[in-house]
Image (tube, rainbow, N blue to C red; front, side, top):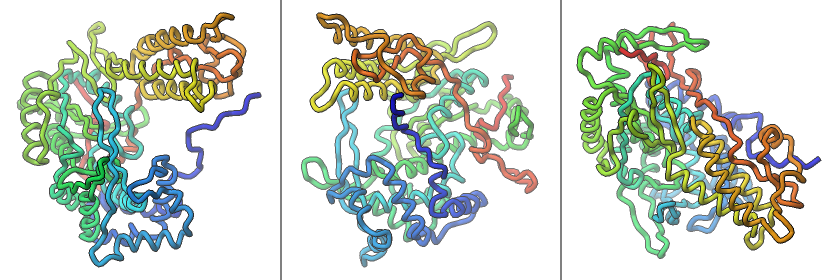
Length: 529
């Protein structure tokens, strides 16, 4: 029997927050934030022994922690020190200096993009990354209690699948067929620092020492590839551990403002009632929505993943009015610029709208409209180039690598594409195109004078591989090598599942007679009037 290859999934019995007894602390912070309490003294928690040890554990599990910053150190250097020394050093770096916390210069690295351009990436020093992780662990439950349920990026228990599921629901069930595609110019590079600090304060994070540390993180000097040093006056450091959380803080205000225009409008809230659907308790605002449609209010729903967001409207007039008002709001309130070239209104009954690597339309089926989605064209071309290039390496391995290693890398690519895009309704059609192209390359490259080395049988699969690809006749092997080449075309569409109410934490205790609703659409039943 072949040896079972190492699984990439974490099989730990404990969730990461349960280590070092921090789970109760995080739950308490969430509950206090949900109830509206302020937090003037958070540094004690951030610099606590258990929080620092948990931060080290979380960073160590990330392969990026072995990339050195400007100090030429990585997580391995910290791991050589006793825990007591690590804890003491973290506290000294943050509070030990008379000038306060001063992060070391961030190493700038340019990452190539598929279009030939580059994306700037910042690599903080490992001690600064550890400090950022300590801060993130304490701030995250506080912010989660105040975040909108309509944002899905860089948040616990949320994923692209949830965002796409919500998109499908708005298009197919709610019949909101006018999609506003927004693009903010250089969002991460243009975040206003003063505005961000005020937003943190309004969320209840009112520890002045902590806010001072965050300011220093935002203004950390950047060591450019040519050796020069820049001092940022705006933006969040891309590559910083705390940056995604801060980005959600910035755009959370936008989420709630859009909610207030329709989902959380007083008229909708006042006519809301609870009902049971299957096994979940939901808040039905349909009566309020029917009344609101008679008033001429703009109907709008937002789905946001980091700085990529879409707004859904019922008709073009509402979409045009919404685009103008949202653009003005982002400019005046967030001090950010909307790109007019990339911002548009799409009628998904006539053409595709792209979101998170998917292109989505609705087609009439009888008296209804149904969603149809594919891998977007640019992503499909990119994935095809990557697969074809790796297929060539299978035939002619790169220096220092063997054929089994190259096959393993190819299989990882296949699994990555299938796992991400399997919620596209037409994924089978897209993957067949990829499969035909890849198999043509493999067949031609592995064709020798003695015959083609690409064979149907002769290798063996592990139990997990049999469970996933055992029924496929498209599995191939390289002659003499046991490791299978996964067939990318052997895939089945998976229905995108939305977030459960328990995960959303959207319901307050009914016994407490709390009249606030954190409505997002997860808790909303849609009816067409």
